[in-house]
Length: 174
View 1 (cartoon, rainbow, N blue to C red):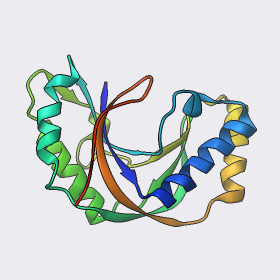
View 2 (spheres, rainbow, N blue to C red; view 1 turned 60 degrees about the horizontal axis):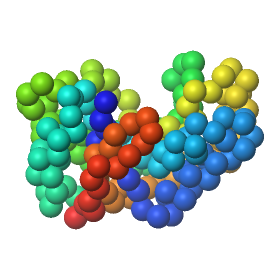
View 3 (cartoon, rainbow, N blue to C red; view 1 turned 120 degrees about the vertical axis):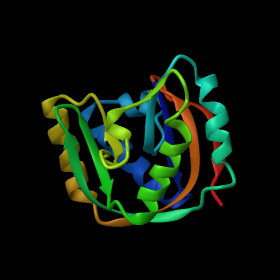
View 4 (tube, rainbow, N blue to C red; view 1 turned 90 degrees about the vertical axis):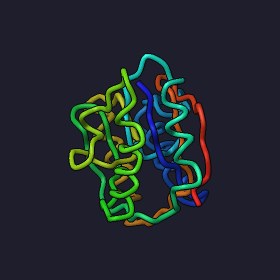
């Protein structure tokens, strides 16, 4: 599995990372910190025999995508193990996702996850993963005390391998 994700301005990255770090400290679940998963929002998840087949399509996006803003307004759970924060799916984010999908959906011998196709996608930033029921409650208590609506600037796009997270390529948006 490979991910195409967007990354944020420094201030927003630090804010999201603080949630991840506080959740790890309170719950004792260090999945996100031990795997060094950076704050990111996945635009596409793709099954492919090799990352090499994806690189040319992702590189073609460089220089054609623009920075934009999204507003994070809520915290949620993907039961039973994931706690996330979620942005409003505005036109900028929807168009960005569609551009990425169009770039990678026709690559032979690859499959875009059904959860990351246009109009069937739940944009989110994972704050905690592999959480037990008790850890989920502890993690939720952290964000319940600290969360408020915030806006981020999307500044980069990247292609990464998962488990552990490993950037294959990453570039700034215009």
